[in-house]
Each structure stands twice: as C-alpha cells, then as structure tokens.
Length: 227
Ligand SMILES: [Zn+2]
Image (cartoon, rainbow, N blue to C red; front, top):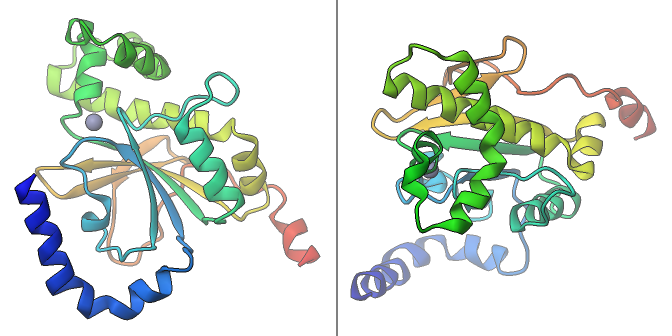
C-alpha cells in the first residue's frame, strides 16, 4: 500500500501541476474518442502504450477481454459499451487481446480453472474461439496454439460486440468502427485484424490506414445527406 500512496504523492507533486489546465477542463466532463476493451492483466496499460492523455480512452478491462453477446448475459462491459456509444459517442471500439494471456491459457487447459467456478463460467463466452481453434489447428505447437486462440477470441468478441443493437446501429450509420487488436508485451508490437482478408497484420505506424474489422457502413450516405 505504501508504494501506491507514495506513487500518488509523486503524481500530485510532479505530474498534476504540469497538466493542471487539462485536469480542470476534465473536471466537468469527458469526450473520449475511443472505447478500449482489454484484459485485466496488469501488464497491459492502454494509456501508456498509446501515449494517451486523461480523457482520451474509455477503458474497460475484464478477464479475457470478453464482450458477452447481447441479451445472453447482462454484464458490466455490455452496459459500458452502450454508455460509450450512446452517450459519449465514441467513434471507435477496440477489443484488444494480448500475448501470454492467462485466460487464454486456461481455455487451453481447463484444469487451471479448478476452484474458480466464476472464471470458468465467464470464459464460456470464449468457447467459440476454443472450438474453432480445436477443430482447425491440428499439429500446431503450444505457442502457436495460444496465439491462434488469442486471435480467434478477439474475432469472436468482435462478433458479440456487433450483436449489441447500439453498436449495430452506429456502425450502419458510419459513426462507429470496431477494431480487433493483439498486443505483444515482450515486443511492443500490435497486430490488427483486417476484416477484408480475415487475417491479423502488423500495425503500421507510418500513416498507412489501419485495417478495419468491419464491413462498410450501409447507411453512411443516408446519415451524410440527412446532416
Ligand atoms: Zn489476459
């Protein structure tokens, strides 16, 4: 605890004064551009990875970066997505998995879930990925297997995300795009799901457009002409 309290002291003394104006502005409201859904893993720090300021990212974290499908399970993450899209009007939702994910390892070896019935239940929302990988990746070594499962889980959660009515409506009007990424902890790399090829590709930082996980907005033109 002492470590945390000392850390807060350092923040108040060294960081806050330099950004006082920003914090004063944020004291009365937020306008984040992106909702970022990732794993609760302590090694994944979205604001640090993206050099983001307070107020930029609406972050939601849970075990396995999971979004249960609409109406199947009332959950904090689904409520947070509704709020982010409907009220905060974020323009992007990113679902970000990561390397060496304990939740994904537990999916591969359910004995790791002994004594944790709630985690086991929660990870049923990732069952699609487990089945897809089990049926399609015979012969892969353990590392490749884990990587495949981590990717497939992100793809599966993107599909769940699309079942939320607020998300489907905002995507159809072109006001929201959704993205599936994997963060590599040891390499500082990000792989991005490219919906047009169905593959994960390295994120480029040279201004090249980031591949999207989604089809074209169907009603974008209507929204534009009505505006
Ligand atoms: Zn994880």
